[in-house]
Image (cartoon, rainbow, N blue to C red; front, side, top):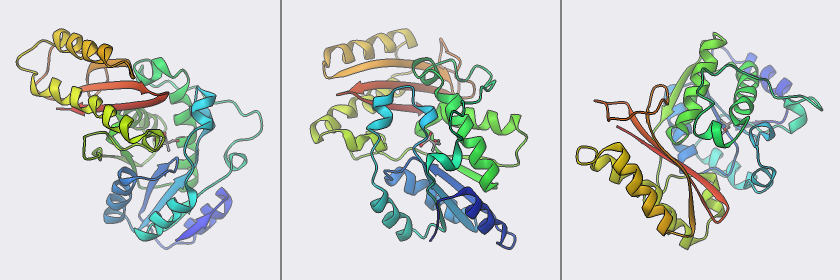
Length: 277
Ligand code: PAF
């Protein structure tokens, strides 16, 4: 695996390859099986796979969350080498941002005003800023994102369309722990007992899907909120029933493209998940 610390070395290397089909997997490190699923799919569909590891400061509205983000670089490199990732880009902040650089503001068609965007102010401007930079440096043909971050995928698709970039954005199904908890780098911050408790996020989503013909959305929402209020360790931030294409709230289930999205705090660790049907 080729490793690069600077965008100039990386783009020089990529431009020296003869007719590559570049697949890009952006990550913030602390790699888990969810990331490896993105990389495996990229390996199947592309001739060169580039993975980036960069904890992007501009997408964190909470300093503590940024500072506590897990860092397991040497383990990550071992995992990447094992699955034959071709290129790793692991820059310092100074390679991507000038001192005092401000996050760009994007028109994300309202996708950034709901759910994650509502509770993490400026988060998607930060994500769009770094993704635009990565896309310009790497010029991938395909870029891979996990379905756990459904809102991020829609934001990146909207960004790519606005910038008129010829990049296919590929959504890869969420990989889960045995108990259903969506894999996330933040799970590394949870104790084994908290991991067990955290399984209630996905169990709640599954309950709603299973009972979609029996109960109204309002009743399902109220029922899940009561379950969470009885579990003192977990703080439910939001539970939204939306159209999976535009994230607008729905009052009734549609034939398809229903998404139920959830965010909750467990011992200070923020977890999100969703189910689409
Ligand atoms: O999903 C993530 O890990 C990050 O938001 C991303 C896409 C790497 C951008 O920093």
